[in-house]
Image 1 (cartoon, rainbow, N blue to C red):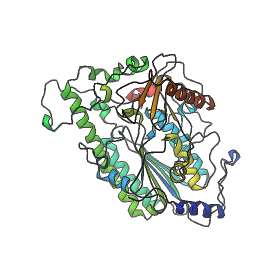
Image 2: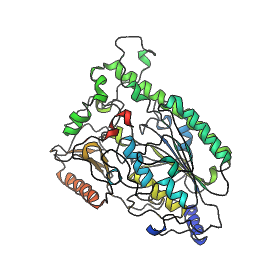
Image 3: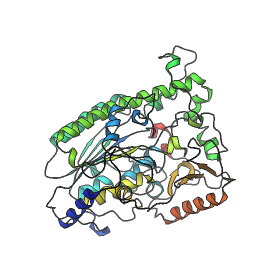
Image 4: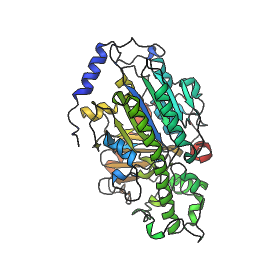
Amino acid sequence: MTPATSFPSRRRFLAASAAAGLSVVASPGSFGQAPAAPSRKRPNFFLLSADQWHADAFSHRKHANVHTPHCDRIAARGVSFQRAYATNPVCTPARASWMTGRMPSEVLTTGNRVVRSVPDLGQWFGKHGYDTAHLGKFDFPGRNAAASFRVISGIHPTGQCADLTVAQIVRSYLLDRPREKPFLIQCALMNPHDICQISCMRTNGGTLPIDPADLPPLPENFAARPQEPQAVAQRIRRSQRRAMSWSWDELDWRLYQWMYYRCCEMADVAIGQILNALDSSGDAENTLLVFTSDHGEGLGRHGMITKGFLYESSARVPLYMSLPGVLPKGVTDERVLTSGVDLFPTFCNLAGIPTPPDVVGRDVLRLQQDKVAARDVLVTEAPFGGRMARDGRYKLIMYPADPVVQLFDLQDDPGETRDIAAEQLEVVKRLTTAAEQFAAALKPVAPAAPAGKEPATVDDANE
């Protein structure tokens, strides 16, 4: 593995970019103004995303039940961020943060529609000299993809039917794109989201498609039931989307995991084709490749499936970044606390273009490379007004007007099996204060949702 301590290449890149006339100072008034033409080649950006991918469901993470050779290729060529989270573990809110650099509560209306006044990733980079393409799942309600990206493609709502087609569209774009501009591609695969269709199944004592001995075992924290806020215990755990799982037996739970991993492997095949297309395009050496997911998957942890809650299985996401000559290869970063809100400013800073006003994210590459302790506590959101605040060791989960506040020691209890809030009152106070201060500093441009109202996208039909 390459050590994560020496990074002269990126500094030289930024210095050369600045000398070439690329602005590195945020300027709200510059929206819509193209930058001066640089004398050196600007980097391309490839945001490759999956839907509902558990952060550890990879063979390079030593997972015995899933085989992901192409995701393993991504891990081997760059940096794996192990403390990456969804800004809100539901599809639309999480993607809104990728697209705007803002928290979901700032830019989403009560119907989970994105306000039009905030520039998105495609608009911003298009106005600053980039050729932009969105290929695959858009899920950005209230915004016309064609008004944000020069090239767009539709998608079938299931990954089994769509992801390989999206991979071929990526190849076509890379071969036929205009060469006078750098590119920004947002490629959104559907799988392993297909598991949502499977979540309604029951074996009912029927024949299994696999020998039960070959099914994954129940997760170690399957039966963990720390005292939960009402939003989790009733409105999420007992929601209709999980109704079928209430009567599952052990084989049903194990079969669900097995089928989820098959969805991951289907997506991995498409990812392999996308990597091959990028590598054969001649652009890979100058492209920041980012692979992530909008949120995770319950996978039976705490007896939960799908997403929308703040336990690690749902809230934590995979995040990989690679850029030859700038980022080291095969490095695992267990220090930087990051979320989807950080992607927009990271791209802007590397491109040498202004960052939109009021973006709350941080430059992940700078945090990782320069070891800047710019974020001691990461704060995220969840349906029903939930918030997570986590530092290097502890994680707090809280909901408005709910007396139950959960605190977990992720160092000693990574499975979140024991709530220690009553034992660590000072930690609870510190993380609660951090979450409240973060929320108070946000600048919402959308009307706040009524207290306790469930976002429309908490149901699969609207995701």
